[in-house]
Length: 228
Length: 228
Image 1: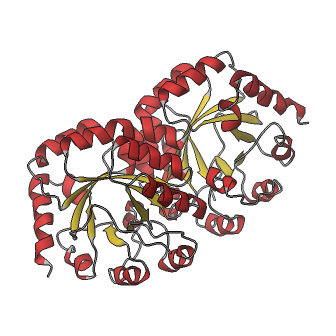
Image 2: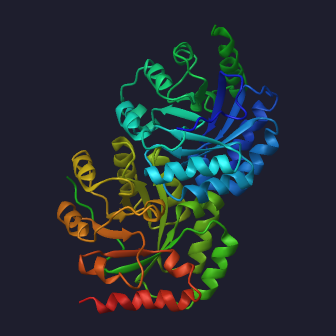
Image 3: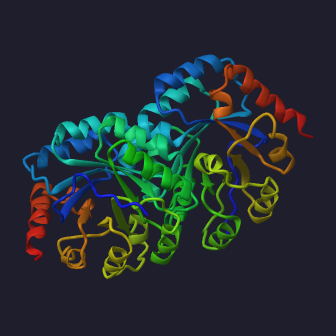
């Protein structure tokens, strides 16, 4: 299987701010609060409800203007028409697009291939798939994605679905991709995914629902340094 | 399990025009061409790449203005945050929202429940799931969806994945929901899903990529009458 290397993520670990806020007007307020943070260790994720509500054509230029030098990810969670959806993301200037690992294999392979063709990174999200299901499906991949997201959904988290951080190591043994982890990460547990080898820590509500998002985001970025 | 009935689909079969065109400017041209068609047997689907590119807040009012009396579906293909995504659709005025059948069961149940709460129809899309997988998952559903979509993805279709129309009857025996069928339906094969009991025929490219979309769409609508 072909090996790929993320083109713009050479210095992990990173903090990824997932913006699952549906309105640009609300996101603008958040960006004003965190505007002074310019470290390249911060990745900005255009969350699925945000892009579905406001549209890639609006949100990508808006985010690029606010974060001209940061890595931007469009969390498309693509399930079909992989080539078309990648082209929508790459045309607007994101650095990476995300396909759902639940998508038909034809879609995943088209998606990864089109990302390479468009010179952006391909991310696969494991939301809703068990480790063993993913392991079996991986045999049908034509290339590895640049990044694999280990993801407990918000609805799953609320419903109390179990999750152990040790799973990160199992995925790292399976793929050469960088590993991102999402779902319920806070200041209290962030050292767990870092200790287990996560390259990218995805945090959303713990930052943007905080009383002081600037303070929280800085604290998360500082947490990266604690890890040996 | 609770039974629900679609509130606005009392006279099947229907033709559903799936708009998987990413740009509003292109869709506007299409709508101008088919504007004279006003039958309520026509449902308008806001396709996933269309809504991801332009945003629900723009595309729903635009489609509603062009089709004030037709049933409008937002094909969100939701995989997480079911409640939030339904609220984005219902706020903008669609008649139905679509959740991916691949989503975690917590998301599917939240999605269906929120649709009922918002007084819109809930649709579940089986793209990427086999009949047996769906049958097993259905045991965990708290309510039936109003409509179930039997769906061969465009990428799957191109890759030559096999599909038989007889599967429609198996689904009809499984759920009281209306059955919609999507994927590669043309004038040449439309009688197959109709004969097998499909309530909604979803057609996209066969109409909007035609030389004369008005003529083609009328032909599809006329095909509904051929069926006994």
